[in-house]
Length: 402
Image 1 (cartoon, rainbow, N blue to C red):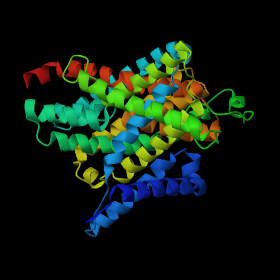
Image 2: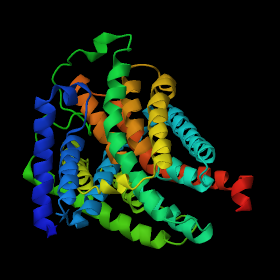
Image 3: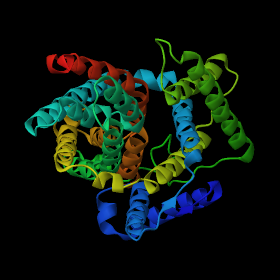
Image 4: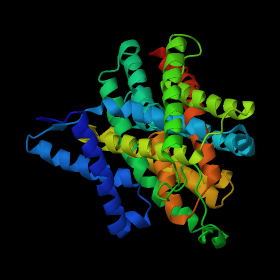
């Protein structure tokens, strides 16, 4: 077994990103279907590690940097969100939220229905529904423990982790093809023509150059650090209370307060260029570490019935994005980008959603509304609503009887 330390893991993550960029640049299929660079590079490395494991060689990474990078990414989302922009997207946030709730209901209904049809415990269907797909690894781990201790479901935590891993991989793979299909349907092809050169905002086009200075870069780095510190402290204060929230939501909230508080008081104006640079770096490195350290052999342990359920969930996610999300959001270019984002966190996580949308906007052009709506719904609302939906399903008679 080879154990890479902090520095070795950072080097590996950087090489994964360079590999991903090279693959997307040179492989027409990856470029045509808008596969995110971290996903392309990370999966190649994960597959290589799977092959090495077959030769009884195992490589492990130091993932201690993964959580700080994720939190830094969410801090930059908060620092990018000004109330004026949020007002513009208010109605669209509400509509997109309806689409998200609809998917949560469909995922659980699909999981439970298929589990019962295949002769499995309905709890397994719920665990392969919104708990692990829209919820991700964190939500899956929490509910896996509950299902094991309260309902006596054997290997619930292992099933949750494997299902969440499956979703993370597929969420990063189907978003681009779905967007490509939908963009072909857009009635106004003129919206896809190259725009006049401009400074990109937020996370839209991460590969475009942004003019920055060392001092303003340090100022923004300080804001991110304050968001991480204050958000972590806030999370500690809310722990075991009725208002408990995931740490990344607290960090994002502090970022929003800092951005709009300074602006309202006229004390300081956040530099979006630096925020977007640091946010994109954090996002790319986080995804590279997350994907290259995937234990794909966990997926091999999935029994055929569970694999059938997850494959069906992937198909449902793609169809839902095409026929529901796209149409609800207006059936235009922005709606196609939103559909790609929905695939990302409907099967994986919010960072995957952002990477999906970046792969699309990098090729076809910016979509400011998509990068406003998806992070706010994916960070603030999805976890809270998912808990409510899960508890509603657990109140069904066959669960109550258990």
